Length: 113
Image (cartoon, rainbow, N blue to C red; front, side, top):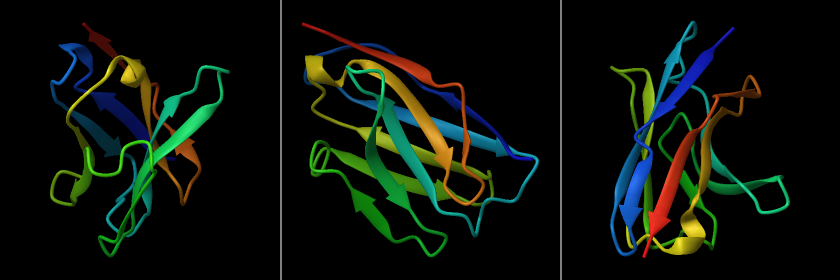
């Protein structure tokens, strides 16, 4: 069973940047597709970005051009760099292991004007 823990959230001003981290334990995730999501206003989840075990990336239109997903297999981790943050980016951000359908507890990002 893989455990995922996100970090790197916090309070940032509009136009600022954050780098979110997701550290995995209990499973080698180097071959797994990993994704970043955030809580939607209706309490669902919005897809943001995904990276395959081969390093292929996919982005949602809501973050394309402002976000970069990456992974470091030596750390068993994935990252999400978010730039040019807006008020609408305020949310709880989640890491997901698509292969095991496991989620982390999330990290809060608050963008202030």
